Amino acid sequence: MKRIMAIDYGDARTGIAISDLLCSLVGSTTVIHSRVPEKTIGENSRKDQVVLEELRRLIEQYQVGQLVMGFPRNMDGTEGPRAELYRDFARQLEEASGLPVHLWDERRTTIEAHQILSDHNYHGKKRKNTVDAVAASLILEGYLSFRRR
View 1 (cartoon, one colour):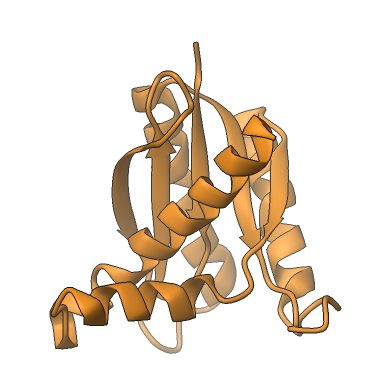
View 2 (cartoon, rainbow, N blue to C red):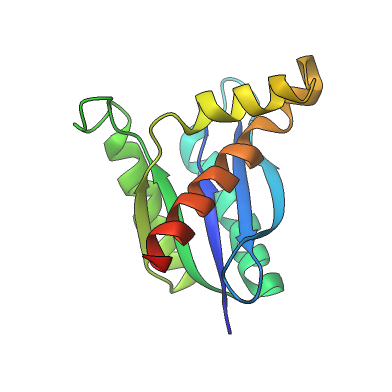
């Protein structure tokens, strides 16, 4: 069996959540730090390369067979202002991994992640370094629930 990986793609950090072997719950999480130095030529493409390389490594390490990436939507369901950036990264990831990328509505995942961390006394730097992995876990949990239905 192959695992499912959820991705909460971001500017400075990308949260990752990987299912267990049965694809029934979140088994592992991590964060890819992708901030590149200011004034770097081609900054976005360089950042994307850092993230893509780490994602390929994790896909191989965890034997991932399916990818789900959070997709920004407005509260009314229309596409958010960053939608094209996310579509472009999803295309790059499909090419790099050979796996299709399912775009998953990520509305409120970051807000819910912050609430979960607040409820468990995670504040400051501790929260900043964890929130993206929690958001990826929420994306994965939503997708796994959808698959069960």
